[in-house]
Length: 223
Image 1 (cartoon, one colour):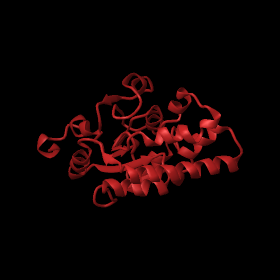
Image 2 (cartoon, rainbow, N blue to C red):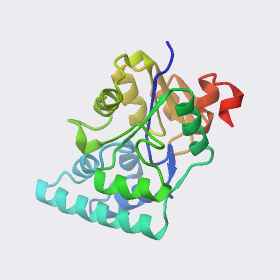
Image 3 (cartoon, rainbow, N blue to C red):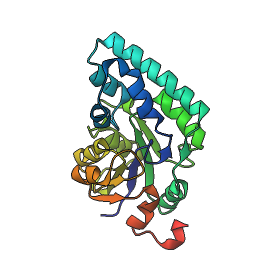
């Protein structure tokens, strides 16, 4: 089956944001003293869902902490703008030039996603074919909803024609739940090859820059 759509996570997969998201997530829930294992378990999830699980607190508290998290993350990105991971812009251009659609899926909500993408200069239409945020579907990762919404927005009907890639176990679990043809773990984020392989990834690669080669695209288009 030829891959028609590549669905990629953002932070740690296509964009280097300095690890701010997980550092700040740990800070805003610090009063409840989550362990490193707790934080790692929620990597890749909808951040509001992650905060709710880590706090186990009333909805009003969760909402207040999530608001603080978003405000601090936007400020962190303004102070130290995210940048594309090495080789990713060329890889995205190569994929799209070869007729492969590219969608981003993220555990961030739109108020965080928009300034992040603006910082790296990516727009739908010019660099991407769709961007799906966690709050735009019924459930975030590990549910398959964001991948399926990316398929809907790009007009791809067959999950076997989709490659999903990310740097966390939840990315892998979401790809498997969606039944996509290839579920790829990348080593540019916080989780390890054994973790991603153990979660069921069909492939583990150094980074998104290697996707064109993985798909067998001609070297003349890889650049």
